Image 1: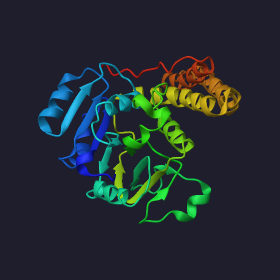
Image 2: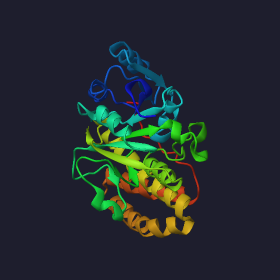
Image 3: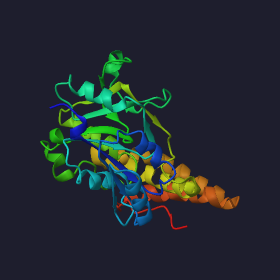
Image 4: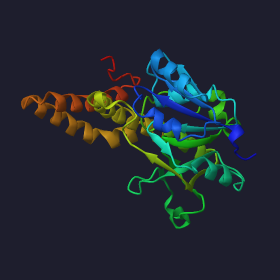
Amino acid sequence: MSISRQNLSIVIVTIRSELVIDKCIESIDENIPVIVIENSNNSNFKKNLESKYKNVTCFLTKENLGMGPGNNFGLKHVKTDYAIILNPDVILEKNSIEEIIEVSKNINSFAVLAPLSIDPEHPNYKIHKKNFENINDILPFKVKSVDGYAMVLNLKKLAQIETFKDHNYFDENFFMYLENDDFCKRVIENNEDIYVVPKSKIKHLGGKAVNQKYEHEIELSRNWHWIWSKFYYNKKHYGFFKAINDGFIKFILNTFKYLFFILVNNKYKKKIYYNRISGFYNALIGKKSWYRPNFKN
């Protein structure tokens, strides 16, 4: 079965995304159902979206679940065989969905399709070296992973794989970062295919999903979670010693930088490097990904 507009839904996970979500939703065909998962209890956000767009249903999680768990939450409410996961700072070009639909008619089997980012300096995929010669501007090509801000999931296909049953698509131990790499790695390990559709284009604003007034909070969170997620990812797939080997030297360097910024009384930089140290240490001792940005103000 190929993708159709009648058999496709879109899932968007948000938090403090009121400044960008409209452009994202307005780039989507209004006949395709959109499920927004707001990682808070912001009832005004839900009310505004549902009154403005007839194809949007917004669910409030009451707490900040993160990206992977938020997507899992949204996918549980999908009633179609295919779902597009989008970040709220992604804008689809006019024929993006149509190109994906057309490609799905000609590929025998796929677990994931992804549109192509229009930014050539930041490709939204990673590819095996042996497949470089297969890349072109027209035909879909196989990749080993795609970025999580725009991907089409073949839910019917994934439901046949043990590791993805019960809507367990994304490992919920990841709060943010590398949950998409982990997902794609498991897809590939189960001998399923991931394709990029080069004629389906998107614009990713990059780092704009959350209101920019929380920029410092996001940066602190980013530094904590990137370190934690990298350690956890390496430990999960390659073992504990690989995780230590990849992160320990940076941990030592970050400790020295933290001490330096204490001496020069740079409070913000001190927090950045403290969070890097904390992220590594918490992952090292097996503690959960607990750090959350403060969006209360």
